[in-house]
Image 1 (cartoon, rainbow, N blue to C red):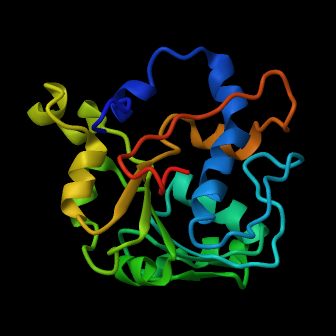
Image 2 (tube, one colour; image 1 turned 90 degrees about the horizontal axis):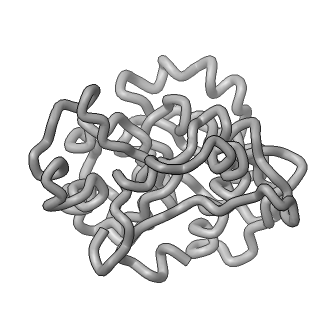
Length: 219
């Protein structure tokens, strides 16, 4: 984003395979840190489970817009930790029955607007080309975790991004001006987020980049 923060599109290039392998648990810690904005007593990352969160007595409501690989993987980690999740897809809540059955009673299938309203923190995990379809309701003042990546072959070429006049997260921020956008989880494959974490103290454990203009939201 602005003020010298690395552009998200540049974050996915130039890292060795070891980065992606080691970053999964650190990626999960990003979401735990962002949730602290709303609930100070969230538990620490569970080092024994990749992409997981340790159980907590405090529950945070997380809305997830997008039930693809990343959105569903984050939902699984969050409900295992005892948090409440409302998740939506581009179709209808009743098409998420299999996922909700897997996630259990802490999860519910909803519309995108209901996910945004439900969440104390909201994750937007949709193909970037569809960011303008994200509901504009219920985001004011909320931390929005943006997992999207611009992929010209999938999304079509956008001159404003290709010329570095702006970034994908700045476009999402313009679409949702009341949200506090933080880019995260876009620099790791979903299966490594799920499977290949590293515990604290492991010499191969690396951090995952985040970016945003809101210093408090990035803590």
